[in-house]
Image (cartoon, rainbow, N blue to C red; front, side, top):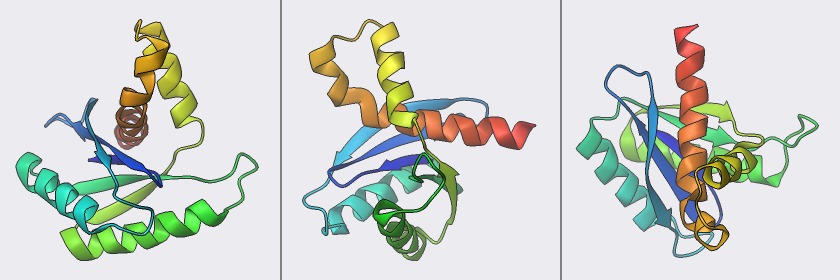
Length: 137
């Protein structure tokens, strides 16, 4: 499972059973920046539904490779994911994933006003696909 964790939404993607391709599946809308109970519960439901064995979580480093406040929030979320699911969580560099997701949607002909609806789950799929490609190499 790939996750693009944000302060308002969490994009979710799942790989196929052969770990070759990532598919975007949904965007979880968060109740608030410090409210994670329902978000974690939904992720747990998806883990069970899809038989997830590992979570790949986007790691939001700055473009100059430094770690900012978003990295700290992501690490806190990672700890909560591990506690809730009992699964290994791999941090994966997500720099430019949202920009790339917007490009994919644009190239796919998705209207500009509709792109925001899909961008987070497409970004999650790009994060997961990057990880999948790396484990095959």
